[in-house]
Amino acid sequence: MNEIKIFCPATIANLSCGFDVLGLCLDNVGDEMVIRKSAQKGIRITKIVGADLPLETENNVSGVAGLALLETVTPDFGFEIEIYKNIKAGSGIGSSAASSAGAVFGINALLGYPYETKDLVQFAMQGEKLACGNAHADNVAPALLGGFTLVRSYSPLDIIKIESPSELYATVVHPQIELKTSDARSVLKQTVSLKSAIMQWGNVGGLIAGLYTQDYDLIGRSLHDEIVEPLRSVLIPGFDSIKQAALENGALGSGISGSGPSIFALSKGAATAEKIAKAMCEVYEAINLPYEIHVSKVNSEGVKILSQQ
Amino acid sequence: MNEIKIFCPATIANLSCGFDVLGLCLDNVGDEMVIRKSAQKGIRITKIVGADLPLETENNVSGVAGLALLETVTPDFGFEIEIYKNIKAGSGIGSSAASSAGAVFGINALLGYPYETKDLVQFAMQGEKLACGNAHADNVAPALLGGFTLVRSYSPLDIIKIESPSELYATVVHPQIELKTSDARSVLKQTVSLKSAIMQWGNVGGLIAGLYTQDYDLIGRSLHDEIVEPLRSVLIPGFDSIKQAALENGALGSGISGSGPSIFALSKGAATAEKIAKAMCEVYEAINLPYEIHVSKVNSEGVKILSQQ
Image (cartoon, rainbow over all chains, first blue to last red; front, top):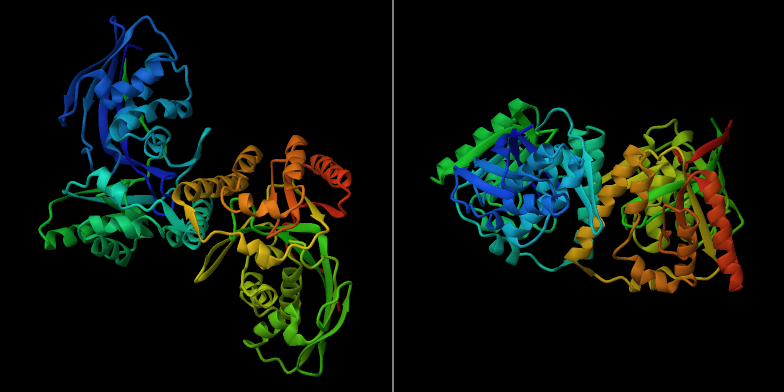
């Protein structure tokens, strides 16, 4: 194989009660990347379409993630990367993670799969470190593995993949505002009440149980964030109205995607997900706030190969 | 049916990372109760063997739990309760919960099962309120339902039963010291760091995932308490040595049972559980501390009917 074209999915991290540990993979929202072998060693970003991002390997998340992988293997050839961005930077649905995950997935494929996909998470995390200063895994893990992923631990890194119930859909609305990650972080408190923490881990347990038993009601009851959402949601215009509209239209639950400003809702079945999308759009149209809307099944496989030659 | 004799199991609450939400049911450690119909309405505790506990209905946890149930149904007969205690009060393996759970289970049976077992938790919790001032469910839920139980939420009460992996065993050692619940509580801090809380709910997620997938290694990796064990374990003589002995002898994980002083270890298979028991005994024998030791499979059904007539 000399060239691979892949779909690099968007992801929802910080899934309600699962702040910092739980994420899921979207199915029809994502970037495309073409990665090919080159005689010249190392990694060159040769084309970026759809976003104004640095071409220098060391300043590009896909370059940095790929270089982290190449520190552990030493092929006698190099790689060229073309990136076709559809996920907007700063949207809160894992734009940098899609590029980081795609780079390591594609390079690993062109190397003849020396690593299992699960073991690529550690390299993709280095792209996240470049993007936000923190090598977090809760977007790159679902982007690579699909379904839901739980980061049980960072030290040592321990990622658990959880299959998604078959009819689970996500609706994501992205209000076109800039929400700086630094602002989303600065509202967090470094301590939480023991009582709230207990409620949160009760819900994490309930959510995981609901996913394994395909109990949509339990998933819905557990999609509740005691700790972060109350602090961050005030930074997102119309958050309460969007969430209320989602729940009134059949959402199992709704919350902030990543660190925002996108807002997600989960639901059972495509029809409900579309109905929720319509209701969310109406909220932002009523206040003349531009938005993008996505409706997607949960993607059970992660990065997908579109073609290879 | 006029009389029922039941086995009322001991339980482990505050299961490592699952402080206040996760408990499990033991199989061969527990009390027995005989409950029979009487012409006189109300509830009378007619006999208590093996413990010095109040006979007055309103001062006995089984009486209070039973009365809570009888507030919702009005039979034209009453109940006599005999309690044969094997679980020591203050041991940390759910002595009051066994009596509370047994009372409501037996009375419900003699009433012709107006309630599903799951719906009895709310009544049994009233016995716990008498025992410790707090209507907690993390012992009575596993005592009634068996297996592992998750208290996802108290408001509204939402209990999730999780089947135990088939080869999961518990070893419990009870050092014969008095550890007041008030002391075990007073060492808790009312706030925790966000970082520790995130690690805790990552582990709760991992533990639940491990239980559903019968992944013993994952169960073991997840049996870790960032928050409460470091504070409470100092109140239990030899805790670190007992835990270390358990882990060195094959335990998946080890921690404080309930609010102590009992210490539990979970393991795969009876042989390992027995080996752990031997190692725990040696630790307490070396320091001349009296103890009781229990080895038990996880009980998948909860309260058991021994006979009925």
